[in-house]
Length: 541
Image 1 (tube, rainbow, N blue to C red):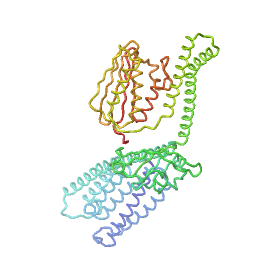
Image 2: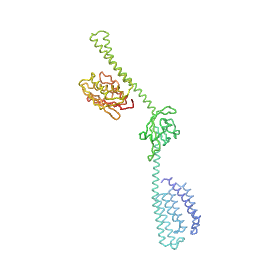
Image 3: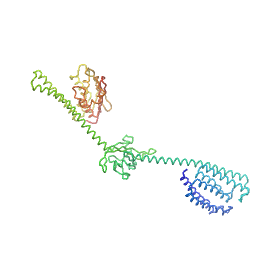
Image 4: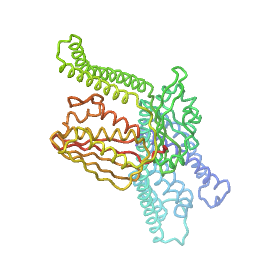
């Protein structure tokens, strides 16, 4: 037990003693209840006065004596002697005040500990037993009723001693339990304070802004990061509605969060104006805040300043854009240089007129072929770089596939050793641009045919889902290597000698325009599977 706790208990003991003496003994004499029957009324009055004087002495000593346990035992011993003196002065065995002795035992247990309770119980037993014995043998000048026998005296002593020790046991047990509970509560209180301090330190030092509100959306907590990000001091923020700080959100409402199906959590992004630094882009997550028993007590929000990241992202996109333009320009230059070289050589030979008529015709044919190749490169590039706007309408996708495959069968690259099979399901209505999808299917079909130089089979199948349609092109060609499979949708990437590398890039852009997906699975020597998924009914008409 610490000195501070013991001082508080001693002060309480002094206070209770004064109240007890004043209310019980003082009123007893003021009302003169049984006053005339006391053997020594004046001595009893002097005892009460002495108790008041002792109270003053105790109060003075409490501020000067530092050995508080000794002072506590001294007070308790004096209380025991004073109680027994009071009993002696008011009739001994017939005294009305024998009930005070258990109170001194309780005081000892509460102020000190269980052992002190037993010490005071023993001291009471010795003093009271001795006094009653001396009274019985008339060794003390205290008269008693002649009707009381020796057995009555013995039983009285036994009853009082039993009461003293029983009270010492019970009060000691309760006192020890109370002390343990007090220590546990003190430790819990300390832990809670430590936890509160720890939480406060975390909240104050976390780089993200944090706020909490009550159920009406009024701000309660606003950490340092929140002040720095918003430029609003916590003193100004507290008590304000949260939408006054973040105007891009509506006042939080748990019902609306539940309707959103987001588990009482909502993410949003918006712009606020910092008083000194201008506009800032904020990413905010707001959730319902619950109490100990699960009741909704308010809302908690965590937010970050994305302004710097958005700026970096824009710069990165700009750099990527210029890098892509550079790479694209290099690829275009490479693709154009080859046919231009052939054209230049043919024209120079024709200009010098050093070839026969037969070679002139051949050179003219080469020049025309290379010009056609140049025209195709430019046309494909314009299709990729400046695609026309899609025109959505509802049609049967299977009919477009039928027409496309029929055209593929009649093209020059399709040989007798290549088989084209279909596995279509019924009708397949879609809301899309049929001309652009025809171009996608043509590019995929030509890619599959060119991947089977030694012959093979192209299987085209369709499938219908709840809100999408699926088209699969599966060939038995040479396949694509692992290092190239991630590049096949890049502009001008090709592994063919005469390819421009724009066919699959155009197909990818068209499917992306339709908010669909195109994927590929391939292994060298085992063929390739292209899967196209298009949303079925995207709200356009």
